Each structure stands twice: as C-alpha cells, then as structure tokens.
Length: 120
Image (cartoon, rainbow, N blue to C red; front, side, top):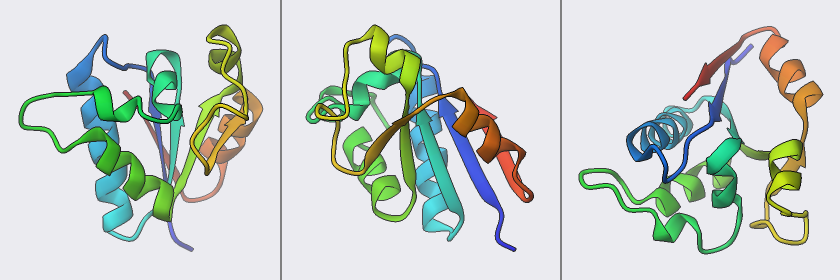
C-alpha cells in the first residue's frame, strides 16, 4: 500500500516561509510519486481562490501557483469548511479541483493506514 502524505497549511502571507515550506513539501511529495492531500486552513485558505497564489512572493521560493498546480494535478487539495465560512468562501468561489471539507474528513485521512500528517 502506498503511503499518503497529508500536509495541513495554517499560514499564508502572514508567515510566508512556513507557507512556502508546506506547499514545497506537498509538491515535492507529488513529484516523488506519493499520494498527497494538501489542506488549506487559516490564512492559507485564501489560496483556494483563483489568482491568489499568483500574488504570493517569497525570494528563493518556487512560485506558489506552480506548487499548487502540481498538487492539484496529481493530488488532492481541500479547503477547511470553517475557515472557508469565516472568509465567506463558497464552493462556487474556489479553483476547480479544490473541495471544501471539515475536521471529520481531515481526521479520517490522518488516521488511515499508511498516512503521515504534517502541519505547517
């Protein structure tokens, strides 16, 4: 059974290095052939919206929109239900391929056999 890497990002532009690290790890894991589930929570929630990743800039970091695209292409991206609601983000607002789900879905993924969860 293949292992699944779950990366939960709690930071956005408020903590750019932590944010970029999470996206970089998720995209690198996808490139390595891992099953990846990227969870956008807190301030990273904004990156579920079209055009938002393109506004992120961190010197010496890969473009966030490229990292997000890599995960969307071969993995799964989820926006936290409560985080979306607090920001008035709906299913109609998000990038195609991003789902909105809550804590129960995160716990189910994290407790699955062969899963490894990282929180940034």
